[in-house]
Image 1 (cartoon, rainbow, N blue to C red):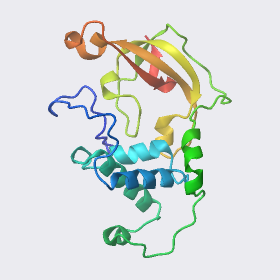
Image 2: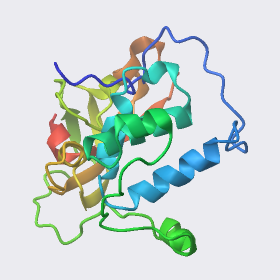
Image 3: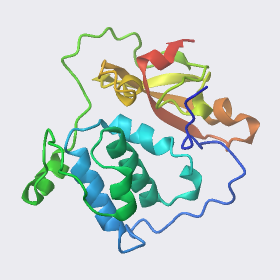
Image 4: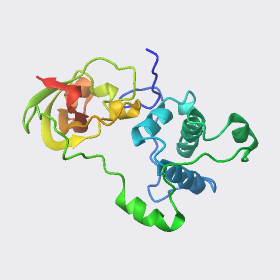
Length: 220
């Protein structure tokens, strides 16, 4: 399979003990706020979708060796290089060497708070799609891997769960991540018993929920 994601780590072992960080500490280095600002500003230009940016991050070959904002910057460089918005030489020299290319949109500093508050909705309530499942239906997730970005975690492939909520049509991350268009699909919250995912090692009473698009599911 040509597509290799390094970010789908749920349920995998061998990475050592998980040490949660202080949730009130947003940044660890002085450059990290700038990394966040640049990433938000470039995302607002519309040069790529949020799913394409996720795909760029999860396929960084050194993903596991990078910090959170190092991953963001690595993906940003990759996306900009792919679209000719920056050159290898400019990155190496950390300076602009050619005229900037026109962008579809530019996020001004004064408009940033409103843009962040507005967000980027992915629901498409007017999309004409047929909803196949209802709350309470038993479903089985897709069991095979796919050679592209997907939001179905590896640990949930081929597992049986129950539809807990129907969200309506949303941009389909799998096609959006490949640059193939939105192709809205019904989105569901699916709940799994912990033993279905982790076997007898699961904590008693554990329930895990994921949001899954309709193409991930079949009736169980």
